[in-house]
Length: 310
Image (cartoon, rainbow, N blue to C red; front, top):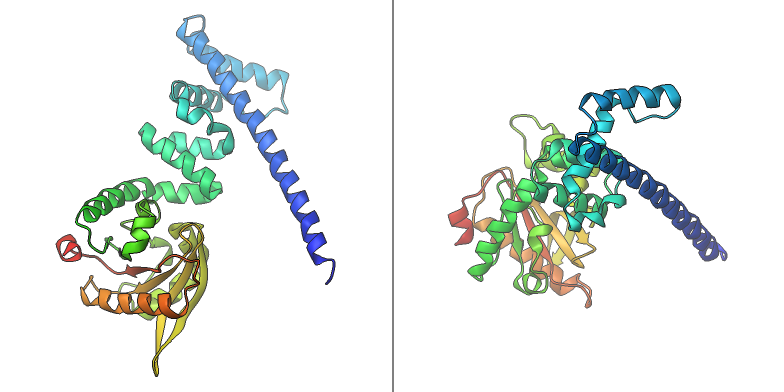
């Protein structure tokens, strides 16, 4: 259709306007909660109010503004907590209006340290998580796993060797890319939680692959939203032989192909030989000239750090 480009532009204008409207409304709501939290905190700190005043305030709002939702005693106390936790954190001040209140409540109620709260604030903004997606990441210990991965990758990087990480995943990162992207621990975690697959006790690699495809939305969420799926059993022709990659992705931020090889056994060094073979073939025959070297991930049951680092 000759007009399709123009029509898509109109759709883009509409979507951008909707995004700006949402941001504007959300900013006003978060600022409202912040200001109420600040006012209540100062009244309580100055002893002008006793603790029982909050309950009276909730009842008063309900009586005077019965259509107004979200101002029961529990939520008012949550608003106060919101202000109390972030009031002295200048790094968070520019972030707090960029996510919705439901996500704020999840972060307030399910996290402990300020570092963890800031981590999920930034993650929610970056990945544009729904409340369900954010809750799953918090419940699966995404923060802890990312911190562990960061430490292990740092140690491995000091040895200037090909990197592998993982308890349920091992990741091999080609050296040129690891130099271009030193923050790979932000992308590839030490452990991936795949409890959403609901696999039988004794499952095969075929079962694992089928479940990952079937539960693809959850799998992509666990990986990160910059991963774009290319194909399963992706065919590589090397010489006169055909080889098949279990799962092939493209990572938009890294600008490279990402191979996922699925193994139901504990990590074995020979897994890396096969993975390196795939990476070299991809870089030679499939990778575009403007793309970075390919990355390989071995999804396996567990690994021995000493074997992997060696």
